[in-house]
Length: 115
Image (tube, rainbow, N blue to C red; front, side):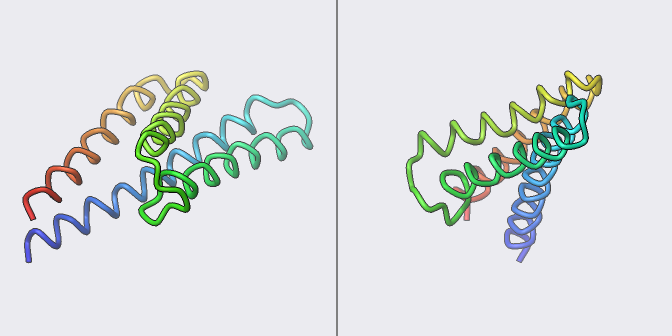
């Protein structure tokens, strides 16, 4: 029972981190553009690109099961989100976010091994 609750919480937190990463990338796209059209296109484009990559390679039910591509996608999306936060001036969050993601992924991995 406790293992199931722990696993559910960690997978839920992982999903929240994925949403935060997509949001940070979209926010960066909007904040670094000048015109209204460019803001919409860059913000939406960053979010869509991250979600498509995630769906193809990193999602639990990914379309393509390539472990190296899954890791590369996670590094690209989470690292890009951290870089975006850093560039936007959210330095503490930019450092804390990837650390929390790694801790969550480790908890999922090691929790799965013990089940």
